[in-house]
Length: 96
Image 1 (cartoon, rainbow, N blue to C red):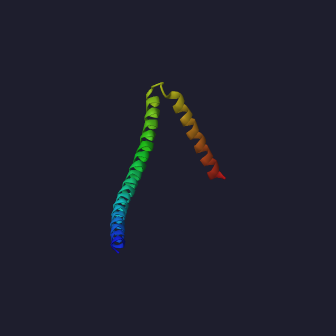
Image 2 (image 1 turned 90 degrees about the vertical axis):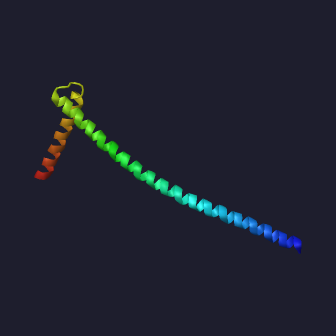
Image 3 (image 1 turned 45 degrees about the vertical axis):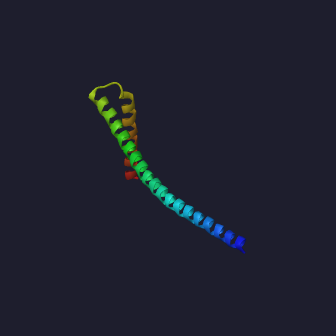
């Protein structure tokens, strides 16, 4: 009988230990999920900032070309030609 009570007591201790570990891991998982969510938001903000900065850089290259710098003149001419073609397409669509 004593062995049975001892086994039950040992089982009870192990069960309490498992429940404590489960609770700890559940809380840790919640924290990690929140951190992941926060990092995803930060990543999206940084990606948007990168796109914005890239656009600003392109505008700066165009401005430098217009200013007289030959460094980006070919790219600027190509960009202007692309914009003109896009405007022509819009005009064609509007006239149709």
